[in-house]
Image 1 (cartoon, rainbow, N blue to C red):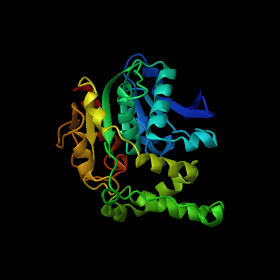
Image 2 (tube, rainbow, N blue to C red):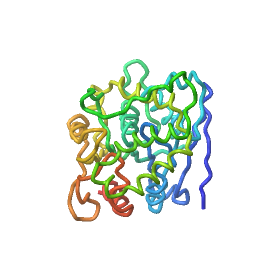
Image 3 (cartoon, rainbow, N blue to C red):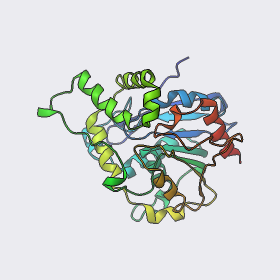
Image 4 (cartoon, rainbow, N blue to C red):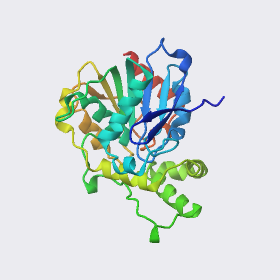
Length: 301
């Protein structure tokens, strides 16, 4: 059964669309909030979110201007890591949740870190009205990467600012998604990859919004605040050595910046990763149940 989308209104003409899966577990098990990365909409990780929702409530949502979330041109222009983190703060506060876990993927991981340090903001400190018990930082980083450290493709406007055709959009989406997987995976999963590309096309991913997200990814600065993240907030880092977008070294760097952060273990016991040989789009590697066990194992340890 399809779960209906709800919306929350913010000032500035912003409407955030969200879905809660596993809502029958609310009040019994701590919910987890999945924070999307650049160009990602909540539909993209619906499969893994459905699997996670067999064990706990799962909140998925669209960043401002993406998917089913709408906003004004001014709100698009105002996109930064901080504004996206404050949008997330408003959403969780709106839901009235007092104890949560967070999972940030790629740019979403940067947004999560910004959220965690909002109480220590230099000019606008904002206490969090909820407890964050566990955090997953997946395929992300804590500092702006140098141009030679990443392969984030810059979006350029179409000639004459005309609307792109479906064929042109597919080429752009395909080129971006190719970076989310390693060459061996792409070779072994050609049909599956083309299906992933096709499934991305119907979703609203305005290129001007993605361009502002790219700008945000290159202009954040909170590394000096990361040591202030409470040690009671357990941070698990998940990063594949085959990540073609954000290097594995960026994931290792996180554990030296956040006091409670650790790289999730590789091994064959329940809750461990069988290998670090996976790419940026982590949930398309390994079985869904394996990922559920990884998440649950960390949150129950």
